[in-house]
Image (cartoon, rainbow, N blue to C red):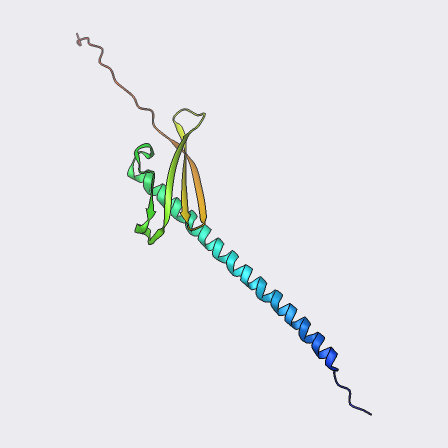
Length: 129
């Protein structure tokens, strides 16, 4: 009974197949890492945009608020924000859109804002008799 071993061709083919499989796995890991980084950045920008929109609403009237700035106070000086107000078909309702940008990524958050109508009181000019 003779000993049987792998031939050189079989070893080379196996090595080539393992190399191709390893290249595919490493490529997939790289794509997964980039996707994870993109998702984390998108989530961060959404969160920063929501916080800024809430802060602007608390500070007062969005129509007179600042329209752009950065997130230095939140620890992200490389991220900027921009606020846009657009009129809608509904009276006293505008759409507020805040866009957060960091590098090549940007996320926008919109909500409808009701502005209380301004009332003016005019004197009638008559005395109370």
